[in-house]
Image 1 (cartoon, rainbow, N blue to C red):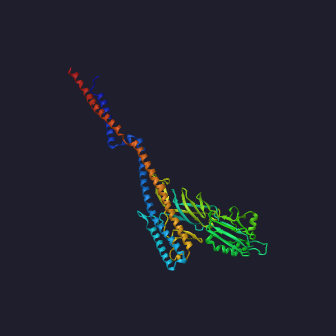
Image 2: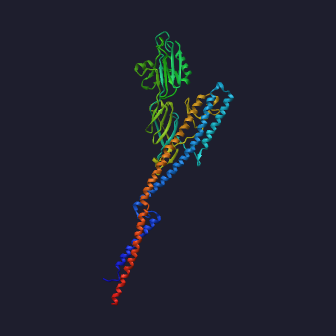
Image 3: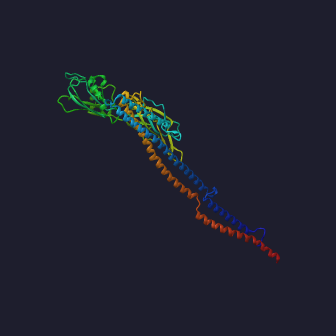
Length: 516
């Protein structure tokens, strides 16, 4: 049939040419942009996945930058801490020199004190001046803020890291489940037989008294009172680490030898030297199974009851406590939570608190600390928490001395432990604690940089590579495929144009019928 109102062939040719030109435009766009997906209609599902992958890649790229910046902060802080450590070591040497009083004049000792004062001032200056981009590092602004800490329960709290989560503060609850104990040996004084009577040595005896600091031997003559023996033992307290006292303040009740400190490393030992014919009366006793010492002690009754047994050595015991439901490991009266996910802390418990099983206390962390974002997503599992405590002299070297917490500032001129006070042992203990504190902080920073930041950078870089490869597969154009499709589209476009031209010419054939 010959019709001119509707040219079906032309319509078909034009429709196919339009499809070809549309496909040709897609190929040209992909080749010009290098992307397979340029708009949502190209691949809706692929576009969603690709954008999500791009978001992850962007976050991880920033995470690498965060890790690198954190490493720079740590390097800056560690450099300042190294200077503080050197100053503390020099103070230690000056203290040792000053304690040599038999060979050092007062003027020389005063010169040492001036050097110590200068070093302590430098330590505080470093604490106040160490900064990174305006961020103070060692003045305590990056330490945790504590509230409600009772000195009657916790003498010193060091919070290494804490995860607040979404909470504005974090409560820390402490309960002792095993009390700290000293090493103790008891010696009877309730002798009722014999001519000498109670409260005195029944015969001469040579004894070796040993503790964690050393050993001392002494010979006790027959008839010597336990009160005199207590004084003799205490005279060597600094040498042996063992002190003595009368039971119930009465020599007739006996005496007790006690290690100066608490914990499993502390002990007291009393041994007879040789086996003389006389002196066999002398025996020492320890509490059975580490039982806690009662208020009133009756050695005879306790031996009969089986709560005290004969021994020549007794060790102390470390405190154990539960902190926020996690078992903390003790050393003496100190508790450490090194591996807890929410809280990493070191707590120095008050001796009265630590020596009572079931003691409880609590305090709050209300803020502070340093947070490092090391992952691509903002959540606690991809963050590291850390504290940088103040290294000022008034906050460094906290040591319990006679029940009071003394700091490095007490070694300055006019302080309770300066060289003029002649409290060289106390001063040395404070400096040793300060050196340990700085070393521990440097070690924690080094461990964070080596084991966390460096490994985090490597793992994140690997993740970026894999995510980028996955995104490329979804979104990037395959040039080999696209150039082949372009050639096909160009050929079809040219052919379609020619076919459309022929289809339009078919209507001209109708005119031949009119001429007939």
